[in-house]
Length: 123
Image 1 (cartoon, helix red, strand yellow):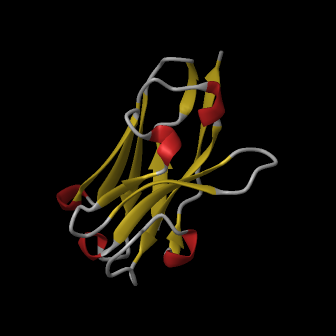
Image 2 (cartoon, rainbow, N blue to C red; image 1 turned 90 degrees about the vertical axis):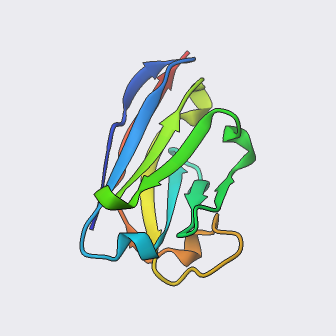
């Protein structure tokens, strides 16, 4: 089970920190990812971090978002700074127990998904 928290409403330029707590899976052995979906749009990969801490970001968040994980707490984080209205979406965390190497910003790699947390950025 994956449970996200930390979403909310902020003004443009603000910050939020999302958390995702995992249970029922071997967190340290899983690649973890953040995805988002805005109304009327397809789900988009935002960031991922492998078991060996290899990290990928989608270009639109580079320099603004930071993904991290704490295996001792079974928790994934997404620090989001300099938020823009176009970051408004439902944010989901996901876990891949099959990922071994390579590009992890692919939703088809992930077999566990959270319920999502809403992020709304106003201008």
